[in-house]
Image 1 (spheres, each protein chain N blue to C red):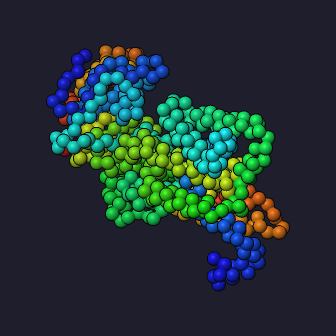
Image 2: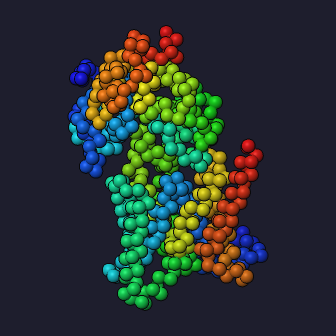
Image 3: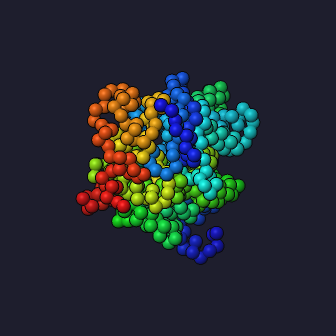
Length: 287
Length: 265
């Protein structure tokens, strides 16, 4: 990577010298793999109104780590497993219950957070280990994690390639979709499971508090800017990728020295502000 | 009133009962929907019309049996559904053409629309006289326009049974006339069975060929001229309905009796 002429040119540009450090290159690679996933899954999170769902999954990270500590499992593996269980569990209860979906999610949310806190409160030393999950830690991403991210990206893109249109259908009206022979339950469960995986991976990058932003902000910006369902995907991708790269580089400058995850989300929110203005301007032009 | 058995019904409800949280919503519904024609399920608000529809679509657990027998060629019947003024997500950027292609094309819409599916979508929109809407945003359509686009989406299924939930809701009288005229023509051409759920008696008296009066149970079934009498309407709606005098109805022919349709051969 460092040997290519193009790369040395990039690194020589003002402000980009930070990318010569190997850990920055790993972080960049990790973000380039993560951003497309959060962008495309985020589009559906917004369509399905599942922002709160992703919040519940990200907060289950604590409980997942706690569970890992109790059963002495690898904390990352425990987080993933626990996240997927919570995600699929919420979907199952939601589908089978007459309660409003935010109520169901609220109950799961409270349960996982309470469980995490209960375990942490028993053992004070664990609290320190939980710090990285709060703020995210993309700068310490290792090679196996990058490999897993690449694998997950492949799975997600295959799923989206086969299901994007069907999921638009379900997002518009699930009853209409199922009457018209779309297999709603299959897509909902697969989506919940895969979204849980993406959310947990994103927790490592930007931390528990900002995961939902990574899903919602590019998709919301895309809604403001796109004129078609196809365009929405490309806008979300553009916003997500550019915010990730810009956020990483900005956070590494001497004059900022901010947390990477927070900086990424701030850049994305800047995009959103611009999109709001453009939507308002376009609305006036059309009137 | 007894249920008349049909030789070849399109839908059969046999002793259908639904209880939601212990409250009986439907009790022992026995009725048949004749093949072809337009059957209307009428009843006041809270009569269980929507519940019966959801049971038919497999969304609500029920006792008894609901059968949708296969047609003469023996293949499983296809359903088309036009929901009640779809609570559309108006913020979703999506063109009418994309809305149509979404139902037929597997290739994700971010790679655009294949010509084949685009042509089919425009044809379907033409069938509901909405070809001019193809480039418009779905979120910017009027109630009547959305209804026609939803009808086009249902026709994409090439339905044997087309189910419409409150088709008159949110559409003005003129728009409704056009819509019924459209449906009448499409039904003749494509030979589907039409099942509408409505609490609007004006629509039902003019456009249906068969009526099921529902108020938690079946009150009456039959052709509108026989069924929509003052007595059954009082029994169904629970108050005196003097507005519809069955004698004022035209003789029931094989098709729709609306003025808009009567002009057709």
